[in-house]
Every structure is written in structure tokens, then in C-alpha cells.
Image (cartoon, rainbow over the protein chains, first blue to last red):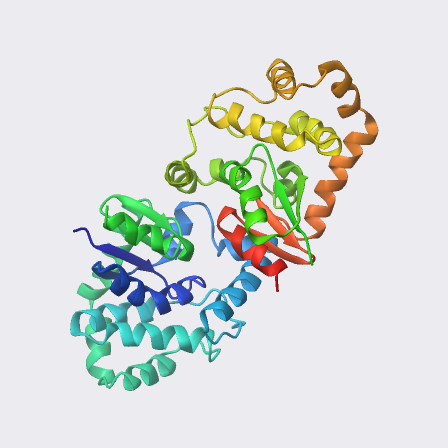
Amino acid sequence: MAAVEFWFEFASTYSYPATMRVEKMAATKAVELIWRPFLLGPVFGSQGLSDSPFNVFEQKGHYMWRDLERICEADGLAFTRNPIFPQNGLKAARLTLIGLAEGWGVDFIKAVYRANFVNGLSISDQAVLDALLEECCQDVARVADLAYAQDNKDRLRGNTERAMALGVFGAPSFTVEGELFWGNDRMESAFDWALR
Amino acid sequence: MAAVEFWFEFASTYSYPATMRVEKMAATKAVELIWRPFLLGPVFGSQGLSDSPFNVFEQKGHYMWRDLERICEADGLAFTRNPIFPQNGLKAARLTLIGLAEGWGVDFIKAVYRANFVNGLSISDQAVLDALLEECCQDVARVADLAYAQDNKDRLRGNTERAMALGVFGAPSFTVEGELFWGNDRMESAFDWALR
């Protein structure tokens, strides 16, 4: 059976509720879930955008914040609008790759989203990331050495390039072999596709 | 109880499956449905876009066509990609306003969407529109006189202005008093909002 690859970005607002429910969806559907951090910057850049579309298109951005608030309420998720938007998720994504390889990645991912959308912190701040790593019982210096090494930087770049090759243009996205699904609201369709 | 206003555009691709299921949704939820044709041109123009975002952002457009195809398949709707995109829905929208006032509007709306997304026709072609009016048992000359009169042009402009005042930035959209929902996939949320 095909796995679902879950493409998420720490700057992405709808990736927050998606992250918080994707494990349960995978378990319910009994489909393998693969977490794929990537960067939206190069994706938006290739579309000629130098900022989040939610900042470029003001009415759309205004709507998104309200929609996100409704979704979090419906999902029972705490939510506070963080004035920092979009966040720079580069370091968090590099750390995540180490965590996913070592088995503490999903806990760290959720901790980063909570730091952003519940606690209103800056997730590009190394002190904030250090505290989240400690929450996940990790040695900060050891993980940072691995995360910021060239081979790991290259892995993250490789993820972003593969996302773009698959046609990903926003986050969250889901791919099932060559089939692309965009948005938190396409999650169930993606898992159903894996079961076809 | 609040009604749901359904904002649709004949150029809008996702408005096609939305149109084909909105009556059933309204009946199931027992909520009043108000059909609101409007024009996306001025809405996109106010966002600095001179074409559909699906043409401006190529990867997004590529995805949209595939996504629409999947949605139509899941909904049991015939679908053929029309090479004309976006269509000019101005005349069809003006005719629709007359139809909605006279009771044949919903049949006409569905006929226009089928002409576009099933039969691959140009819905700005008056001969095509004439044939659709005849399908709805209407006297073409009589309806055209009403539809293209200044007061009806002003009604359509008024709809578009009201949509923008409500924060509508794309189609389909739904409003319930001041609450905005965007997209075919937010239809159920909009009707549920009316029941709160």
C-alpha cells in the first residue's frame, strides 16, 4: 500500500491544525505517514512572491486568520495569533530532520507549532528552539551540531526540491506517489487515495 | 435563523461542483439559501491581479484542474476541461439576476455551468446563452431586454460591491450575516454556522 507523505512548513498557519490531527488520521485509515519538512520560501519565490500570499493578498490574509481560529476551535486546539508572520522556520526544520531520524521528531514538531501558535514565541530564536529541544529531552549542543552540518542542510534543500518537483506550491500538502493534495482540508482525501 | 448567501461566479471552476450540491445541502440542514451572482474581475483587480490566480500561478492552476477533476468524479458530476479559461460570465450573470427574480434562475445557473464544464462551450457567446434560455422555456428577446437594461447592470454591480464589502476575495464563497466562508470545501461549515 502507498504511504502518505505530509509536507509541512513551520511558517505555514494551516500546517498547525494539520500537524495536530495527521497521526490520528493515519492510524484511523491504517496508512503509513511520512513527515516531510520543507521550506516555502523557494516555492513562493519560484511563483514570483517574496512574501506569504496571505501578506501579499490582504483580504485573503484577513480571512485566513479568522478561518484558522474557527478550525482550531472546532478541533479543540488552543490558538493565539502570533504577530510574527511568516515565521522563519529554517532552523526548526533542520532540527526536525535530526529528530525524525532519531525518533523524537514528531514531539519536536508539535512543540514548535505550540510555541508559535499557542505561546506566541519566535521560532527562529535559538534560545526558544533550545528550550523545545530540552522539552524533548535532547542535548542541545549535540543536536545543533548535527542539524546545522552541511549534509543536513543539503537534506532539507533536497526535500524542498523534491516538493517542487512533485508540484507542491503551498503547505500543508500531501502526496501519495505522484498524486498531490493541497491543504488541511484535503487530508482525508489523500489518505483515502492511498487506500484505492 | 440566519440564511446562507452563496456567492458564485460563472468563471469560477470550484463554483461548478458547489452549485450542483448547494441546494441539497440547504435542504439537509433546513437553512435558507440565497443565490448571489457576482463578478470576480473587480475583486481580483482590487488585489492587483489582471487574470485568474490559477493562470497567474501556474503550479496552482495545474493542481486546481486535477483537484476539480477528482472532486467531480467523487460527486458523480460530468466534467470536461474547457480550454476557455477564465470565461467571461458577465452576460450570464445579468441574465441570472432576471431568472432568480422570476423563478427560473437556478435552472439557468446549472445550465450555464453544464455548458461550460460539460459541453465545453463559450458562455459569453450570446447564441449559447440564447439556447440555454430556451432550455429554461424563456423568451430570449424579452429576457435580454430586462437583463441588459441599466437597472439590472446596476444590480449586478451592487452584488459585486457588497461581496467586496463582506470581504469576499474568491468564489465560491458563503456569508452568514457577517461571517465569511471561502471555497466549495467550506460549504458545510457555512450552513452549520447558520444553525448556531
